[in-house]
Length: 484
Image 1 (cartoon, rainbow, N blue to C red):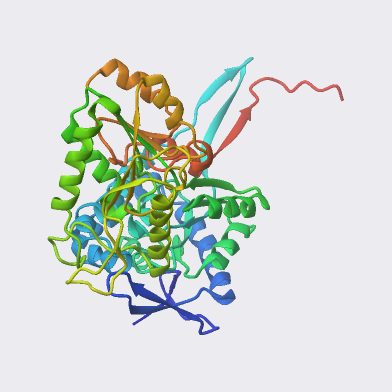
Image 2 (image 1 turned 180 degrees about the vertical axis):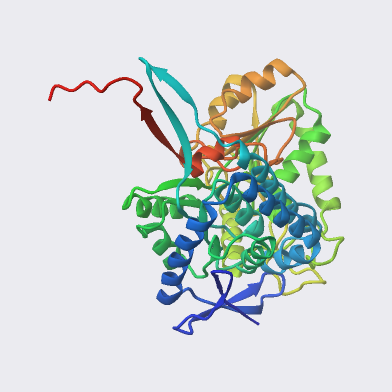
């Protein structure tokens, strides 16, 4: 199967005939090939997006809202078939993709479709004259997606952009490209004009072209910190707006009065869901020393008993394959570092070959105990199923240690003391925080990081400001005074 770039409502052949292969992480077999967005495709994508913007931005907000809601209905109608595409591309379990990936993407489009007619400016009198403001779309926006939640991310980026009247050129990860094409088809079927959502394929070179292009008004990027810095530097050459949703090394703090069963559930969810390939994962689990033994006892038992690794298409599987052999080796390298630097392996730690998927990129769910803050597995983002458990004695100490990182994406606190819960979470240097919960990210809630974990926000009403610009209009009601 050959996948092409989606430009102006249809699939377009490139001129170079250059392609790349996409590998199923659970089998390591090639599942399809994809045409690279060469210079001819790139030129067509920009021209198309400009035309699409001109037409789409002229629609009323109510018209845009109605069309986007049709896209939501189509996404929900095709949830299961789209989930299967995500499983083949990412290696995640079908039971996750069918319940989360497309569902949450559709939720985001629905949320912003509802907000579109409410975008407004304001008016103020000034010494007998007055001025008013309008919120206007930016123009052509670029979205650059990550491989862990490909279709969801395409929805999260396109939903506010399109609701505000912009067009978008979206570049999915070259490892998981098909879902974005399916979203483009759905937008066209729903009535979004051609050119409003184009999809271009390729590696970092295509992303660099988008980030540098003078006719692109904004770039929204999801990925790791190093790449994000390159995208931001490229965007600075033409002073583009940027949204950066980057990596993390997030703390999950479990106080002595926490519900241990719930806290263990959060630790497992925050480390092993999507086989650990989630940027907000709480991979530094700080457990009060007085409950440490009970916590790790239950954690070990549930990790070894309740996780079912294997063919991701099997509905019983709840733990899938890592995205690539290269990433698999990277995660195994971190496990070796943990052992070499003195951490104790509680469970897991090995590469795996489950009977139902013996050739996939599987790593056992891994838990280290007796960790210290200076270990590489505690300091660096692994993006795999590797949990580090640390102990602490008091509140002041754990706050300082939790914040002692260049990242600031997420944080969680488990305690039944409501005053302490809010007191501690207010001191966390992180943009996405949970109390007695972990990982939930509804469309209504802004998502983004502090420090090197990002700039700007996705989802929530806040995001409307990131896809519009303010125009001020001063209206003279009095005779103009002039010295000339």
